[in-house]
Length: 246
Image (cartoon, rainbow, N blue to C red; front, side):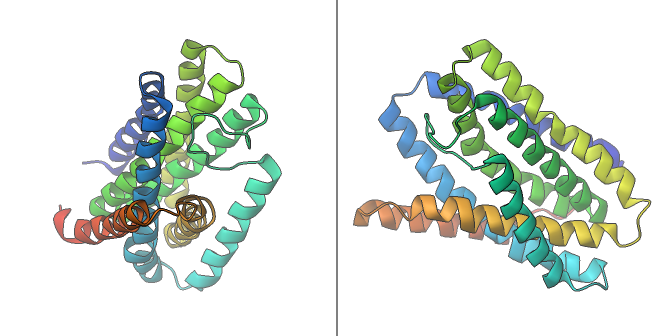
């Protein structure tokens, strides 16, 4: 299938995850926290696994530049973006970090745009890598979008409008996918650079935003569950190396 079609379908699918936020309205707060906490642990492992098992090996094959320098630069850029935009990944129904709902929408639009670039770059390498990257993004987006929806509601925005704004923000992933596709054909070595940049972003999100969240758990039983889900996320990315072969 044409890579552009795969990119458009994948980024649109990722955009649809924005509607999962409506689930927060039907669940009790305690139940929601338990679910999102587990998803955060799974997401942290999936992003780490995606970076080290898929993106970095492919980046090393696609560019002659120093991949690890690009990863470090990406890590720093994600840190700067987060600081400038007050951009944090919130995983609770109410999040005090997001002071302004509209700032959250702006930050998430940039986040989703970058997701689109990453997905496009992966599909331009091959379909299995594209699908694997898409799955890693989706796993992360589920708790992310549940939290973002809660932020908008907490910011005083009506439920239907919050869903609409969240979806519009998510659609920037499609724009990122299109631009990523166009640039990959025009800039030599762009795919390798983009994959290394994506790996740095995945590592930053996992290590800076997600792992600190799951480290807060102090109960032994729940801590073991969190560790288990983190490992499951990594193993899922490992198994995808053998499962997804088109």
